[in-house]
Length: 252
Image 1 (cartoon, rainbow, N blue to C red):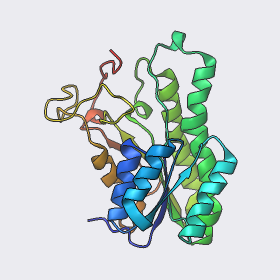
Image 2 (image 1 turned 45 degrees about the horizontal axis):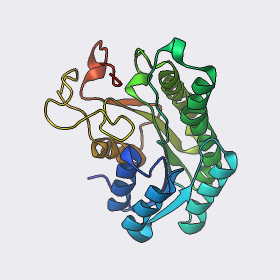
Image 3 (image 1 turned 90 degrees about the vertical axis):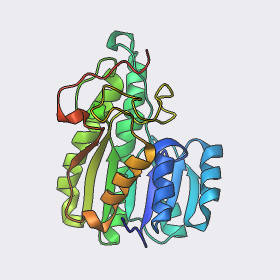
Image 4 (image 1 turned 120 degrees about the vertical axis):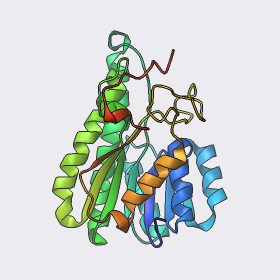
């Protein structure tokens, strides 16, 4: 079982879904966690449920001052920043010709530029502490082109590329950077997804994934058990990435 004892993590978009599952697992494995999100009610409730090992901060990942404030909570309240999970994202699925430039740019601003801002902000405190782990939550849409995903897919392909460059540049400072690529996971982001056996026949394992399963992978990449892994892209998709695939329209 992955041990995160002594680690201090900042997880963005952690008020619900995958981020909340990650925060809960991190605390269960011994970490202290800063839960960041724009969803204040859900974020505060989660932090309270996790006790003294968790703090909530309202955090817009598109705002540099919010990044500084969130990291300050980690370093002031818990004394360090060892792990950054860039989980915050927004999602839409529509034809390219129906996607307005402003909508495209908004998704890039949150999903890609937000992670870029976070990596830049995390370098100094991580380097000062002797290193750290950054986990960028990309997507299956960052491994293959998907219809109706011009904006979301572009942001996740960009995050995949950003991960590679950051791993090369930050490795000498002891900072590892990896990307995680979930397939269909049952979270509030895509409310049409259900769970259980047979819930997603297009996936080789015949079901959707669970947020807790993604959290286990993220915890491993955050831990010292993955100390020689950097620049990797890890699919957690029930086998979709093993071959050519076209996902059904999630909005249908």
